[in-house]
Amino acid sequence: MNQPASESLSGVAHDLAEIGRGFYYRGWVLGTSGNFSAVINREPLRLAITSSSVDKSTLAAEHILEIDVDGNVLAGSGRSSAETPLHLAVVRLRGAGAVLHTHSVWSNILSDAHFGDGGFSIEGYEMLKGLDGVTTHEHREWLPIIENSQDMKELAVSVEATLNEHPRSHGFLLRRHGLYTWGRDIAEAKRHVEIFEFLMEVVGRRYCAAK
Image 1: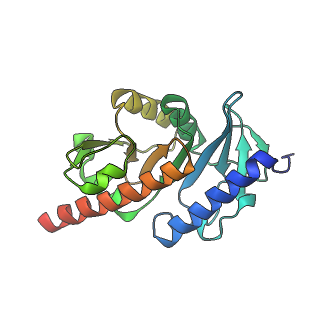
Image 2: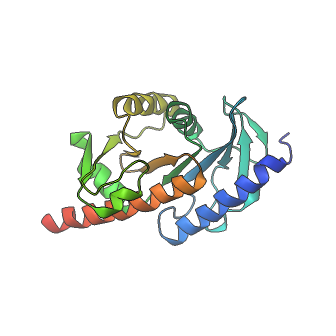
């Protein structure tokens, strides 16, 4: 039986739920799409993550679970997202403190349009300076695209390979699925979502106008 939320989980759960509802109203995680996580302890690893199949318009702290490094639920009610292995891979390989995943219209359009190229670059936009470590609009951000799969173990392997191949990228797209990005903490991860969603809409509108 799952245990009640711990004190360390409660504050993080509140923040993730608030962010999720905000993303819903911006059209980035409609219905039950999307999932969010944040590290609440490093050693041993403990992760707060959204429960599966929850409508993000009603996301609340009670829908956030605490899991261990193997994805086992330690606290909260429900089961963790099927994409938990992807969150754990990002946390392990990027040292992320939070991982946020959205399902926006523009991420779906661009991930399909540029899949054959393995990704696409974004360059020359002032908003790029909102990404961690970027100090100039001349920065060239490569956004890799990974083929989607219902086999989460297989998909986690693809994500790990992509993260290793593109160590400077701040996110990646799953084809016809959505964006994954992260940050040192929840606030930075949220900012990265906002930056990428803005840039993807700009690039997407240009792509559609050129067709």
